[in-house]
Length: 329
View 1: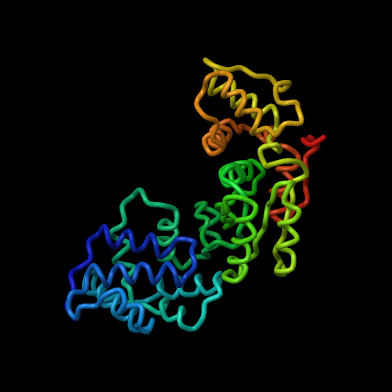
View 2: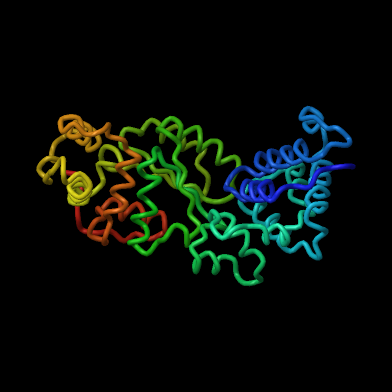
């Protein structure tokens, strides 16, 4: 076998992709295929050839390429920890498990990582230690190992739930909680079906008020340990405290727009009210993701968190504490 050495950039990208929260088989095959196609030049192997190969052979070739670049490791402790982790959260068949039995020199690869790296690579570096991995996660807010998935409809929940949780002493990064936005209530159903077949860890599903039919679609497939929470009124934006919305708008748009809580008191959904306000004041188009980031910047204390959002986060964390402030009339 003849191959080119991997570049530092290829190694960093490969490690990043291998440690993301994605289905084991998909991410490993993608990374392994890219490495073989870009580095191996004798024998010539094409993508179709890789698809026909046994997973053990693919793993062997990739291990050899890595170790030709970085040298043969003196132990495989990191490899074993990654293998155990992937098999603890994903339902992997016997073929997929072969992809995890690699001889990649992770120790040498970690020396290449720059200072500014994503959280999954920070977690990978922590695997060099023999201490309790959950304890390391809680101390350093590493999110990995992931222990629970929160499946939500949109980007607003994905951005704001972790931010609110920090003020309720339930930091998602410390507790290993992964939030996934499906992109709508129908997509939540499809995503739940998929994740329920792939994951061993609990899934918490959060849906807007109009998703009763979607809940009926999920319930027959609901696993032990999984939960569904239907918000009590409207959309997630309707659960935001009025004072927090007013503070956000008046702080960021102070030269163009000023509102009071009275501007938000109607039967119209909060997002639609904000769309109309933006339009009438000649501001740029209202975008939920951008506004959610602004809201996140303006969360200062527990008083900014509505009763139901507090209840949702406590339910996610396995507690039943609530605040007294009511949002839905």
